[in-house]
Length: 115
Image (cartoon, rainbow, N blue to C red; front, side, top):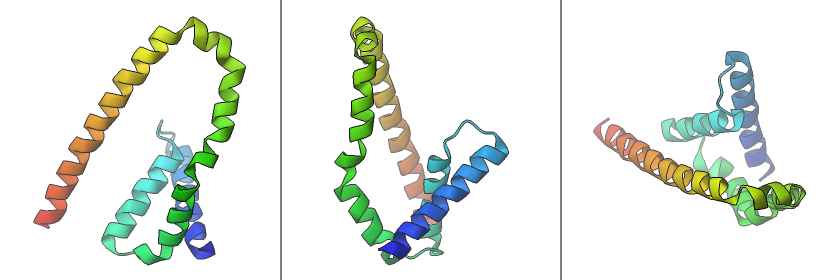
């Protein structure tokens, strides 16, 4: 599992470095996960190498949201004043992300099946 975590952190570091060097507005963690997905698909990284670490992280995912949830308490007055625009932004962005991910996955499935 330690090796799997090391692989995940290496991809995170590579993504962060690429994001900083290229000065693009995409978080390094996203770039790292895309690179990891491509590496898994290409067979560069074996699924078994990262599966244990990934499962441990997803099994404990709720713990990773505790600091963010506690941080929301600091801005509760602002949230109470602006709840309607926040709710609208949340709903619109959620559906846009779902649609974008679904369309991208369909295209990737077609591209990988044809190759």
